[in-house]
Length: 294
Ligand code: GLU
Image 1 (cartoon, rainbow, N blue to C red):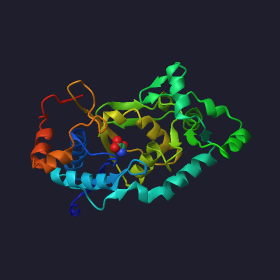
Image 2: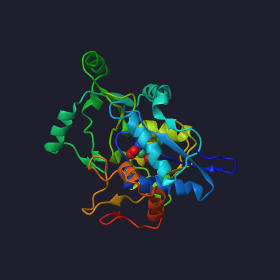
Image 3: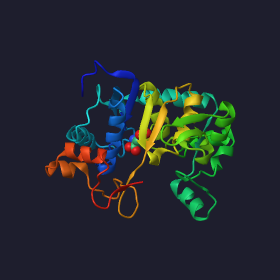
Image 4: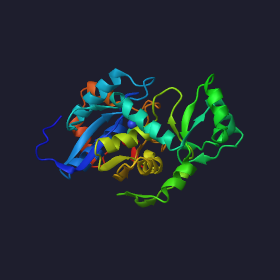
């Protein structure tokens, strides 16, 4: 945590990791880019732990994230923010979208969607398969009846939402002005079957609540921004400026990931490597052998 007496509150940036694994070099790069974006402009740098998925989030990963950032020399302002403290706020937004008749129950199972993918009845979007819309046309009475015995998620009716907001745009400092096309992602889930709120809704509400002026994050989330922009328009939230940075790739050209066991920062930290030096190298574009920028 750092003293914030001379900070420029017109620039507020955040780093928002999910504590479902150990951070790796790609996260160090992302945190460094967001931190420097704020600091070079005298702005605030906030740390938000995105721990809404209680099935996958673990307290020891939170501890590790804090230790990694301190080791890297990336200081954040104020208290650490936890999404798990904000569940009531998310529920309020869900109720509002329901009252606007923009959400519908989806009873499709993962297996049935996988089958649709296999038999090609589900198109592929920039962020994975696009939901075919099976449950969008369920009669409301039938939906209520099925809800008595079956588990379900709530999806956003993107077509209906676009008809409500009209055309939208957003600005990316690296990629330029974007015409909003959330239909490319289809009817995304906003309330999953097993967690109180999905990433898209939580991140949009939190960026507004935390007064984030510049969302600095990786290109892997570029496509998601169209959904976030749509939600901002529906819920009367401000639209930040975006900066989607390149990603660190391994020797096979694949993004570093927690699930692919990319070398974790905590291993390097406990082995006595200098985090400060690592940050300096990342800043200068010096990467370990086999790692490059997208
Ligand atoms: N929590 C997300 C993640 O760890 C990042 C959210 C964001 O930067 O918008 O991938």
